[in-house]
Image 1 (cartoon, one colour):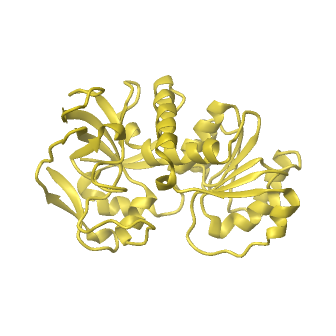
Image 2 (cartoon, rainbow, N blue to C red; image 1 turned 180 degrees about the horizontal axis):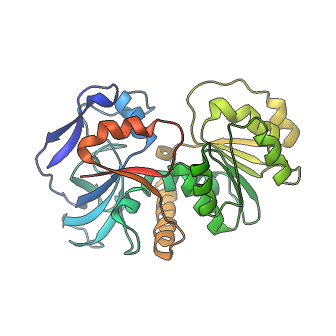
Length: 324
């Protein structure tokens, strides 16, 4: 099979397309022929060697994909050859194994992909939708009727959060930097979309919430926005930190005055029970049509280097997927 391999940490250029032996599933495992592979910012951090959890060299990046089960190992009862599935993780370890034509997964890392979703959409589910679900419902415990403010709502996690929040009956306000991105967020059901590059966008946010502020803020770039988040959050509101690229100084009094809570999350910290609950909700949301991942570009697997360059550029618009 063809697979992307990383033999040293560094920039996108360290990813090379190589021939690898076809893997075989062991006991309790399945072999998936991938028709699409999702890429995520965390893949770039792992590739660069800057992620909290390091990969063991050499490795194949990635944890998200979708395809058809090619073979099942001993003891696997719930899956059979030919089943359409998406994967969230592989047997190769955390954040590894998916940038390939074939992937071995444990049976619990494989999830049903309904017929109304494409393989590209299935590949866009794992990390983005799991992150958004955990942030909204397991960390912030958002409830119908509350107002949620989503920074960077036109990216993979942002679109996922908008769709999940709308489906649960929350009032959604998002941000995007381009007119194209703002229109995309509106199409996903957000009631209001702001341009976070305009100096008065937080004043508009306060006006849109009748002076109260949002009950929940999903923060994708805490090193830039966290202090400002605390200045506009509603009384007893919750800020969930999803992404961060540096340090920031905040005044804790801003949180104290509102009895606000600062929460944070990383998917690897979720318990097995929490992950099982998340995937059950996502499978159901795909089947019902409530969740529809937006695909920006489909690139061949050999173009993984270019895909990572695009991944880290500003102005996100849906997901980039690789086609093995």
